[in-house]
Length: 176
Image (cartoon, rainbow, N blue to C red; front, top):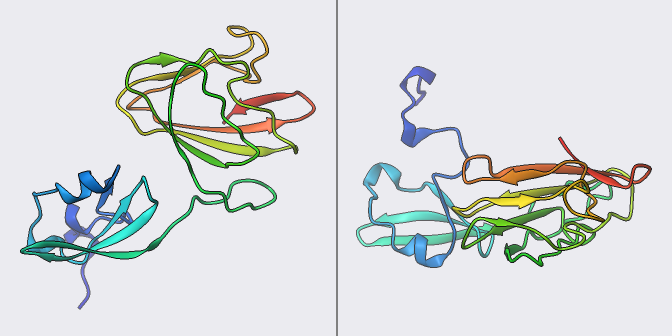
């Protein structure tokens, strides 16, 4: 059976996941499910696993498989994406991770030095994702002595993602 693109509903969207859950509790407490959502996929962020809805009465999920972050470094390391609860002394080690999910219990400006450690190779990439409901501000050297960031930026609940690249000759992380 074929479906015309104009007939695709929001439940039949083009995204790989119908739901994105923070943790097991959030996934298991979902109650607004109908039969049209059977066999849709969900991503659970804390364990980076995918699930498929296999029953609506009762609601049952089947683990689809595990996922890891997409490698973004030029050496193509497959590093897991940690979830870090931000405190002002947070140091992000870019040599171990290519994607870091962040959350905070309040709006915060990071004051650790350095905020993000230097990369070991040129063109190292790092993706920062704010998964919470509060703003997280990263400071440049203009605002924070010895910071390796070229510019100050804030990850908000609306603008959640920052992609950074490290240029060794300039000894700085640049946002792009």
